[in-house]
Image 1 (cartoon, one colour):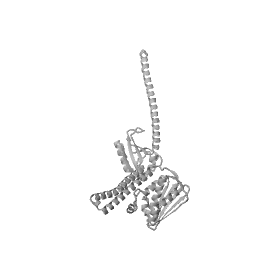
Image 2: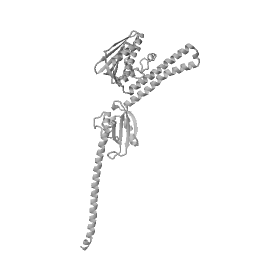
Image 3: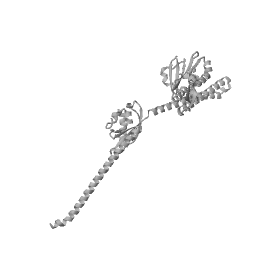
Length: 383
């Protein structure tokens, strides 16, 4: 028993060490549990922030596992794919897109662990074009490798790019034609034609005409640029008085072309608009009507004040426009009859100017036409 008494302090000491170790282990476990709970809270908050950020971004955002399974999809992406809310989470991306090409693109980027971008025309998005970017990252919110898919609608941008490219090509063509003519005639004059008075005068007249055409193109381009890029400087003026002024101005041109020009309008019809720009609209419409109406025809203008809107119609008994051409007549440089338009000095920008000016003022332009029966152009402007 003496040895037990002798060992008691040692046993007590060892028990104390064991108890302290257990307490430390318990404390560590409690700390780890608190840390785990804190991490879970932070992860939940991060997920909430991610959802709020992705939902407010405007772009479609999809978070995917490395197997291509959807972890999170925002509202914009659901709209892109035409999905019900929360219907894709936990499913594969291909179930939404039905696109093997997009699926292969995403999985290849995940496998390489490199960001990629490419434009796709998605069938589930009414054929709209999207810039699809994939960003793999090594550690996701759940501690697993994940990737973020971002979809940005590029349809309108692509359309604008096509318009810009076509516009540059058209301008280059329109400028090249008179410049080529001017150069050819100038070189002919240099080579000796200058000494033949009759030939020289014919060439010089053509050079002057082509120079005038270049000036008209330049002027119309500046007018179109102002209409597209600058808000109109509005003043209150009498639209009826302006129409009367234009009719009086072109009366001689109509008479020389043996065309009857008539106008019906109220005494006054006030609108708030840029007077110079609206005058340009009326001049373009009336001049076109006279230009494309044969001798013996009529051009009728009718102005109506309907309260919130003032409407001007310019009707002619001219050659009219085939139905297939109507959707394109307001495009820059588009001409139904190219030869006649150039012969009469047209630049191909007149109706584009009309449309841009009217729409910049919050108005609307329409056309009703029948081939060989005439055309009626109608503009409506807020009063």
